[in-house]
Length: 165
Image (cartoon, rainbow, N blue to C red; front, side):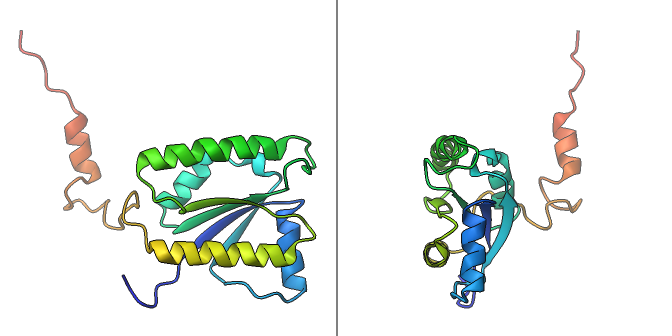
């Protein structure tokens, strides 16, 4: 592992609470690691788990999903749906072989700028401990014709030979 490696973390933040908490942290000049890239979503319950899998496959080192505290959702039950999805996704990722902690979930309200900073710092430290992902990441040269397992080889593997009568 490289000593100067810094993780890339994608954060899906609820528009009403977590994104507002991140905004409060920024306007209050509360420091947090710059490793995070934010995707603003209407509600944590609307995040498709495939987005998280695609992010990990594309080379993102960690994912943070953050929404309103349970019971405080602007869409009434969206964060409960998000909580159920997160529990199911966590078991699925474990089954696929992802390290525990590569995807994390949290609740941050609009008035918790300091808490948002703390969550981002904890997630960044956890991902640094895990290091770069070694599994399920697309390789840059996977489409080269000379590489074993290339698209041409896969086409050959899928073709069926005619049956001899």
